[in-house]
Length: 95
Length: 95
DNA sequence: GCGAGTTCCTTGCTAAGCATGGTACCTGTT
DNA sequence: AACAGGTACCATGCTTAGCAAGGAACTCGC
Image (cartoon, rainbow over all chains, first blue to last red; front, side):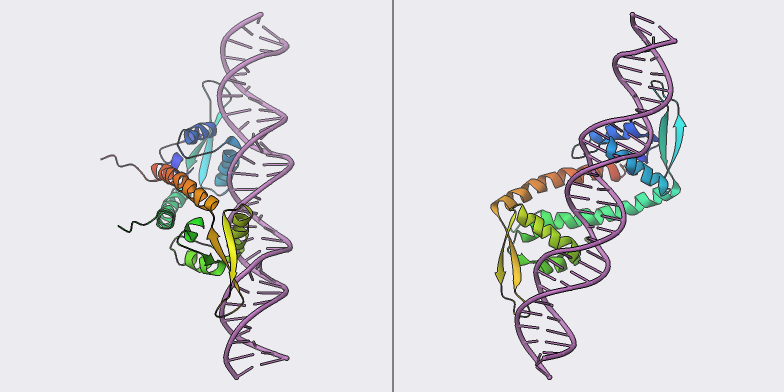
């Protein structure tokens, strides 16, 4: 989620659609809205309302400093976790 | 969990220690006993009691056919998920 | 027969995912 | 002006998972 916001601000439904388009990812509004609320509560994202060209106003989410830091931290954890799972899950070659 | 059992049968505390020794992994008894029970309930592992050289008897877990299949299936999902997260999380180079 | 080490498992709290449903705004049509 | 359809927000309620904590039971050495 935080990574999706790195390039710039986005609104919720847009994020849902983006994730849905990525192979191997699953999400729905019921997941994303509570998640974004938590990120906001924890100060990792900020929001601002902007008008929409077609519909009600949108709440745009933007990374904070803390959010950027948390993302960097997560990337490190992810790399370690990923490599750990790889080492367990992918059979070693014995050739 | 299933991957840890691929090489052969193991008992629960042994699995906890193995996971604890892997960098980036966290577990505890409170997590894996319920997990192993679920795997057994779902027919993905079988168990057998063997005596221990030092303590009460141990319950050894072994992959079933179904468990092997589930593991293979998971590996495919893992690869797709892993690559999806990588593509989102790791900044692309613009050089 | 008692304490220490080992092994098994359960209970209870908390948090997350997600389907569902509900509200509000905007625009175009009648 | 009403209303229908699309867009966007968010909350409720169910289910499940993780995990710390605690408890029972076996074995061995003293």
